[in-house]
Length: 139
Picture 1 (cartoon, rainbow, N blue to C red):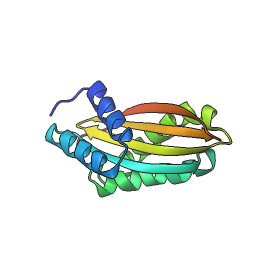
Picture 2: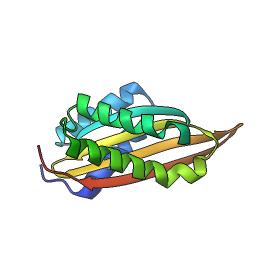
Picture 3: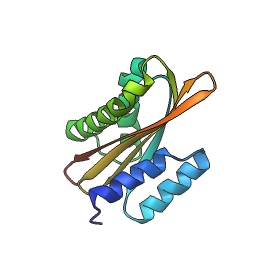
Picture 4: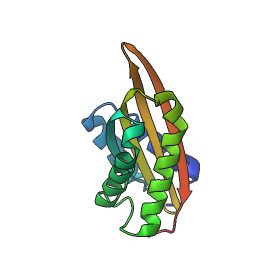
């Protein structure tokens, strides 16, 4: 399927915004029917301290679900896009706890990573979203 970068970005956002594991699996199945492979990864805690772990989990989950194959080219694309998405929201999360999801979606040469999270401070929560895209070889 020849998807646009905009459609793949939308898929990553939709997966990241799911509120339950059941909704997540349903959304991933819907996207698969449209030729888009996707995965979601739960995140939580102090975002800045856990950036390496979040990036690593994004790569591992993407490999396990066949969103990408095991190769440094694909690993680097996921890592770079995940890091870029995280940096887009990092200033809001400095020193605070977060909870949310990373969504990774891919079709053809397009790969998007979205981070959707709630940033907690007592009972006052901020919501933030970061999105990044990479072009990668088809596999």
